[in-house]
Length: 446
Image (cartoon, rainbow, N blue to C red):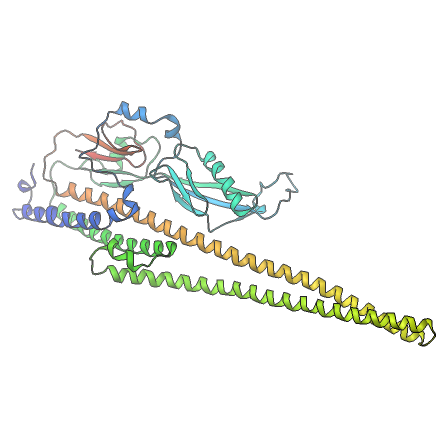
């Protein structure tokens, strides 16, 4: 039954105005101004109008068992990195590097990472690793050598948690949207999570839901602008690029674009100022340690000169003593003075070695601070890019929900269609209630 036959006479104009003008405006603003200008847009499914339609048998043939059992594109991995504090054996078990107290967690590397569309994960300073189709144990094994090479000691990599992409469902269901993926989930399970099919008639309260969906779309667009600003500020900081040269093209002619960029830049400067103060303290420690080393080395040189003078004096007194021209007391005093100078030089040499160790430790602090700052900005930029990608997908889902709300087409028998991103493009295939889903699937109910 058409919408015009169910609700008030004003509803067709309301639906036409909302479903056409506002919907197209938000869609154009999101996907014309932001999506084409960020790498996160590559993660969105392509238009289903031109996607190839394949059968369930063809899809199963393209998915080997190892790929279905291993990681998939879009999976989120919570990785924890540890390094060994010492190479001592566990006194109780006799094993090496297997007990928690012998490892120190590296928080600058530990975090959440996403399997990209090309089947790889990108880790700061470690590079990219192909992980699609691999079980967690193999992923840990291929990352560990690069990590141990970076830190220069024995390490440990652990996948704490794996979160699959959610599944999405649109169409005449009670609660369309995204839902957590569970192994073995079928189309019928997804429909049940969405509250089942909607009634054949449209209730008057649906106009209120349409208004609420419009507000959600507006809020989603505001989040996209904010995330795009944050992403560009962090990219500029990471790549040492002027923000003004890349901010305007990304956010377009929107009047709030510059204000958003200024706010994100100011927040980043607060973080940078704090880290700069810490880096300055490390640099000053190196300067002070070098000055202390120079002073102690100069003292060693002074003691060398004093020792040479007292050695010459002792030799002269010894010659005089042989000729009975000086007493034994003067000879003993000269020997004592020489011994005292030699002892002081020995202590000065020890002090020089200690000063060298302090200088080396201060330089290590400077280098560690440089690496940690580089890791932090790369990780922050990566998190912002993933957040932007997630927001884009959420907005796409909200737009699909909006289209289903304002649609006026009748539905006869229920039909299901799965839109599934694959390594060679988007696959669209018909489905039944018993069809097994995969993470990231979009179920269209007709």
